[in-house]
Length: 114
Length: 114
Image 1: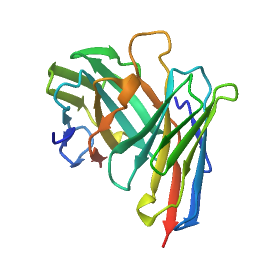
Image 2 (image 1 turned 60 degrees about the horizontal axis):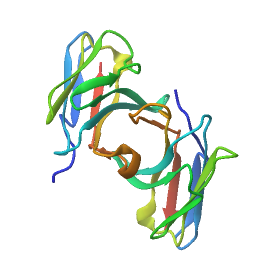
Image 3 (image 1 turned 60 degrees about the vertical axis):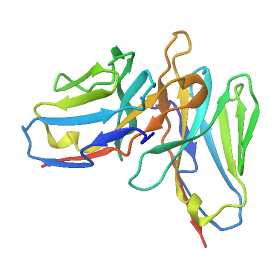
Image 4 (image 1 turned 180 degrees about the vertical axis):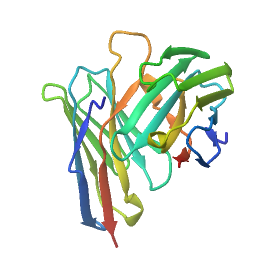
């Protein structure tokens, strides 16, 4: 079953604009990760944020986490056409075991037009 | 490293036939995951291994599906007999430290059962 739900399902912007995607999840987590998937390809890991962190940056990416609201957001600044892809959040749902398994959300399809 | 290698990239088979999907994880990664992606159900975790041992196969749809990892560098996912509803993209992913570095996905196998 899917843990996370991304919002919006689809987002269309112009190059240079910022893109914000949101993720809500249901249960307590150890960490939350964001992945990108280009059409017809595998998923690529972007960033991981732990449950005790509130914000994390990586290049043009900014991720926030609010565990009280069980939500996260991914901000892509100064978007480029190459950022066109689907973006997924994934949560570590194995809080009480030593093993990790990720449960993925439904994804946001981002289209960046030149 | 060549990354996670999956074969074949595409497979078209007739209903009732046996299908075997293959995966070579990144050397040194002791976690291996099999996911299935469809439009209707998104990304579903089927099974994962740690140090070649199956840890959680609760996502395997039914007895027609089986997975093995005979050694650290090879895993198979077998469907016998295949059905049209098995049509999906099957991804293999590996990780050395899922709680820190995320997963590395292969390019996937697109399976079509006619």
